[in-house]
Image (cartoon, rainbow, N blue to C red):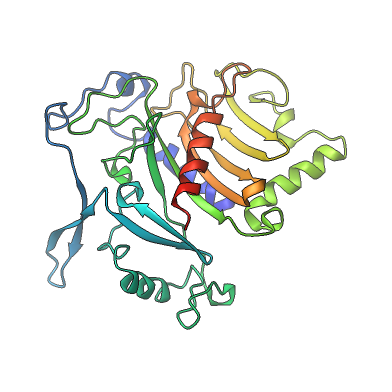
Length: 300
């Protein structure tokens, strides 16, 4: 959980210090000359690989539409490569099963046992960030720009018109991948703590801070930072958002955790703050449900 907070904070700090970049500029920013509707669409990713002599070469990745492997705590997925975004900083190994298993076996952060092919938590010697996925709403197609170098959640793409206000990018990770006892998993810890607090008849910590709005306190104005908390019979979300009206940030964002109890699935998700909550309208349900459905489709 601490890693998520630090990551989100770093994203906001980096965006604040982008030269000549502010909220007004972001809204009026023109597409780069190569990202026009009549330009050829980008069909595959690429990355720079540094040679031993200090030079670098450009290495193309596989076509976006081609499916690759993804393994998480013993659960296998098959995913079109375009959804793996930000693009990795090393050559792709997701296409060939043997090569991908070798990549997993050489990692010290995912617990892949190369002897059994199963998950072994004792093999994890250091924490590591999980694989990120990105997609467009409302179409749910993959993003054709490298999110590692694109701060905007409405980036222009070659071969597409400039994004409309209702088009935006969602980024997410699979924290607990359809495994039993998700309620006892580390990613669900935030929900256990908060439910215990509410069951004691106490307020959650952020409910008492005046400069932060909270959905448990009433409608969201969008002019302050705000917190979304919902724990239903099957779906629970704990999401924090920045202000999206008169905001000084170039990309007001929401980020937080999603738990689908019936499927034992926990996700970490990021999307634009204006699609979090407006008044009492729970706009967050659309990006959350889209990320859930993609995860279910990809599962093997």
